[in-house]
Image (cartoon, each protein chain N blue to C red):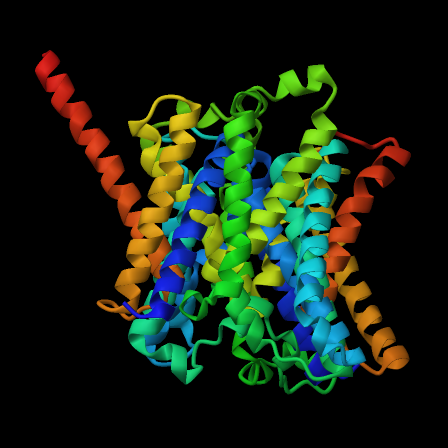
Length: 302
Length: 283
């Protein structure tokens, strides 16, 4: 393993996975996991707004993405009870509008022709470009000066992970109860309920924006849903879901690396890491339920 | 109006009517996101077909292979969703797993094809975003044929269709749920494939959902909902295409969806205003 090249990819993927798992565990029990897929498309206007305001791919782009995804999540929540069609129609109605506005903004700002916002890059990710981290051995991770050379995507992903984890731990008792009992929040004061809702929205927006920035739409969608679905098969409580899901994500990352090396050795071609990771997490999620049944730990599927 | 603009407008009208009408059924079943996943499932088939064409030099089979592989990959993705549901997963979890699978397969195939031969991902951006401005009669014709067939099927089977859409238990009782699901998968994939050139796979689901949401407060009954959605979808798509061709030189697909969004907002506000006026009169 070449530390300066592989550690940034591993740390970015792992922190993105933890952030996505936290957000996915809030969406899956409510039947809204497809918000993760929709948000990854709806984010486009936020990326463009952030880029237009700052002129580079810095923190403003991440902030723009967080704001637009938060607006999207709030909009979906508001519309859910205001139409008489089937489930998920509000998500399907809103995200194409956001994406359409993004495409029009891309055209109006002239960024379409400059290639500064590359739709391919946003969609498919570019984990392989996460270079370079001045790391010679593992002990260097404890030296603050080394972190100044960290790739911005990795820093953003780690910061989002830390913030998301802090928010979830802070509001754990409320989140846990509201997931188990949908009417729990009606017993709270409107201010208390609103604060928890804002925290949840922030965690979801942060996770979607950080995952997209670090690893692209493909990895974002896979990491939001599949590890949580796998964790669900074994866990009994919310924190157990998180731990199982993180373990599944770590296993998938290790298998991704192994598959990538094997493909390079056998075929002479290195498939995209984000694609292999998506396939592994989906495969592990699909295998989790039968395995849990074999181990007599099965519980109702999400 | 020149010939090319006329073809583009006919293409958009056909796409809008097809997506609007079929979308009303999809909305009633709550399967909009399943249709979105089906659209994303097409990409891996497209990449596979392009890879085969590049590797074996089968340029003359380019278009047929594109259709066959696009259909197969999209149908397999939808099949995976129904399989996962059958195993006990919720609709959302099955859709999320299916889209993760579709994306993963696409990326791995893409990098393998790129590793062995020449293939650019730039062409895929057209697939993602659509390119209505370059519609030709050859690309419009499949949508037109599918529209005529679906309209004929709807005219004959509308009562049975209504029962199946609004009361899925009735088809389970008759023992033909699996057959109807297979027909549903086939119809969804065909509609998605024929409408892709105009709107692209990301915006397509908006064309399915928004017309039904616009007309829902104004119509009563199954047939009026489907008909009105089809008309609204067609009119908005053609009007946005006409605007894009002259007055507002913006990407056509995005303009269609944003104008449908504005239409939905206006419809929603109008319903609210009328509700307030009625309450005021009643008081």
